[in-house]
Image (tube, rainbow, N blue to C red; front, side):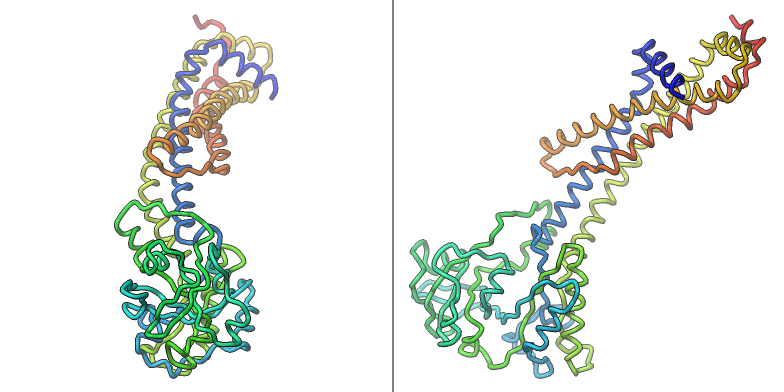
Length: 419
């Protein structure tokens, strides 16, 4: 075996240019496949990160009707929706894929939030606590979070995000200022922003709608204890759960949804129910669209491997013809068919394996070049790299089989007389 490999390298380096040209089809094919697979993987990872959100693993379980998210402030009949008390919260935390949760109230407001003449239109008001702020990935950049006395004394205090702070205060320091929400004064105690600065890559109007379609002109967070000042008592909560990992998001949301809906007694299909936001499924759908086009490119790139394989077969047939007398001499000295077959198969496999290794290096370089020029994400796939090298070796064995069989079947007398 090792002697065959040594002879293979000797033959390859004895005809460097011919060997390189033979390997060229394999190199181009493997490089194209590595570059395409890396781009597909990078794009899919980008899509998942866009929708799932930088590893936060958060799933919102909202009230909905007919698949459309609603809030209690929309005027729907929610008498059949139970209050999520501590007992239900404990059951949610008992779900295996859930590691944390928070309950909160939510209302969309198109008017009624103002400071003097400055008014917010299309903002969200949240009735929550510091756990909600933490799970949603907010960080306090000015002022403070809620404190125990805010809840115990039912204080009318509010935390703004940067969008609502700018809309109401236009560059002034909001902390300590007063705003009106539905006619009630609230003191601003803090300003928050998202912990991560991740921005999704947008390539179409559809993707913009997916990522930003629900954007508002700001978020205001008030303690849930003062929610009855603005809205009804005993309003149903919305839920946010944190899954133990990204792949568990779908099951965490689904199990939480089913648990909450188990307490709803109304069997009417049109009744308001809880529905989890399955961002992971959205990511998979976009990934399918991305992969469908890329798979066509893979088939096209595979054609060059076929051409490379034919080139290997051709050069091995030439090699058999050139070494006919050598083969005849070996067989005359007692070499078996198996030995001759193994020698030529090994040479074909070594030739294509070298081409595969060069192709992998070229493919990785090509992937990063495409990333820089086209500004698309890439992620090198180790399994695809390994498979490419093994596949190139298989091409050598498959396309080198016919020349190898021809060499092993030569008649030693005819081979020795060959000129």
